[in-house]
Image (tube, rainbow over all chains, first blue to last red):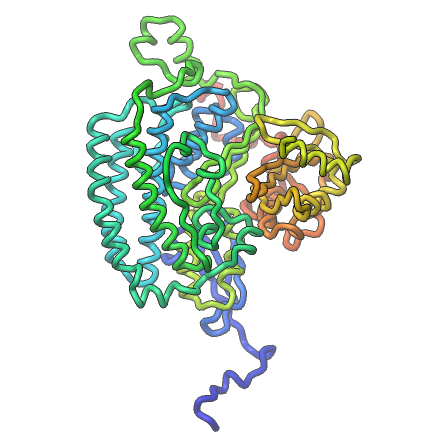
Length: 402
Length: 164
């Protein structure tokens, strides 16, 4: 018998014994609560059956009972790696419904916050790709940088992970000098570390062997699956909401949209990496061009008045009471607003019937939409590549399950 | 002629009888259609060289208890001309049935499962119409308006203690 010919190869496919592997729901390598029932032939995945919904919290139903400003904390818990983008996206949806004009300064401040959030989102994803390929060092360094951004959030709104940042109409207060100091500190320190991290992995032979041509998807399939964000761009489609439908004055800034070619793990990594550089550039431009002016729009029905006003002015007292009790009626209407979230097009489809709460609120959650392509993407690959594919898609359980 | 007017014209050429209402809601072209041919219409808009709505942004259900209707909303996007369109079909509350869109968009799969899960809309021809976020054993469709947010059978929570 030829020694090179393994006896397993001689067995006909239908006689093959497949094994079933239950990956998850709580598996440390999946970074969240996902279950996948894998049908395996040795170490090769034949098919996968994902089950989701383990942390479903009925956000769309909850939102139907809550006044508009109380929905912001719900949006925090969608993609909790970039909560400020969700918050600001929701505020902009309500502002669109109300037809409020937002001062330029607020728009620029929002851009700064949203780009910081994008950096933290991509940074976690890329650092975790490093961990899953066996490079823990980069992860530790990058998390230190994430801490700096969280300190900026803390200075602006007092919270760190679930930020509830800003208000409908703007910000509750202007950025303090300390917040600006921290932003400048981050802008000087972060590029050095990011460059170091990039050098560690970008041309690393082991990393490239593990990621190139792994978990790929073609542009056609990605579009058919309604991919968006970095995952779609890695497949070679230059769709970015910030450019396609600029919001919050994104048209004022000069940045490029990186695209990949194969849509594999390496391309997704590189796209996110380049987006972080672009985000840094946008933040710098926004700080440079930052205009003076008020830090919130003139929407007394939704924006809490200052405390002195409340005690001395009848109107302010009424508004304070109405906002706190959530008794402000909103005009009738049906709006869709989308922002470029950490994972792609984050949409808010809102129907108001004129009451104090939405009639219907639907979140277009990019994760939920592209995670359904996961079985197709890992079919025929190794188990360890499946883990890597999942972390490179940046599937966030909170956004997936709403 | 603006692009949205052109879209309406293209639709009217072929499906004049199917259109119920055309409106622009906050600059978003919204067309209400009869439910029978919705997938044919979407396929037509997908293939037509001038519309090319080849990206499904989202799909969701809406319950209108006053009219005893459940609406299914489709949002399509033409990435080349950057044009968006919203299509709506209205289904009867007792037996909401509509054809599946998975034949056109693979991404419609879970979105339709979600709509089934929360509104009970049956998508005919769907490859795997099961609940996606809620437990399989659930017997209600929770986003319908007749189901209140809190479980009304609970006895451990007294409303008077919460000022209600």
